[in-house]
Amino acid sequence: MKPIDADQEEEFARTLAAYDDALARGASWAALDGNTTGLNDETTVRLAAAKKLLRAIELVWPRAGRCRSNPLEDRRNPLSDADAHGG
Image (tube, rainbow, N blue to C red):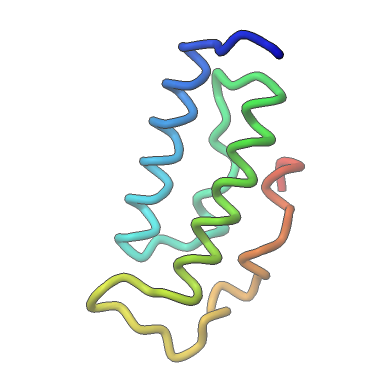
């Protein structure tokens, strides 16, 4: 088992929290993808999976006060793995 890299964990948490905050403000999923500066490959893959989960939660359980008439309004599958590959 690999030792935990505290710097990577901190950056992962900070980046994911910023992503979640932006989703809460109604930002487009597509506009939020791509920010993995300072993350190694393993953490980038974990971040992509966590973002995918947050998008799924947002899709089926929108924040209070937000209701989408068309959950796929971004014209992109919110559950795709595109951000795992930089796209």
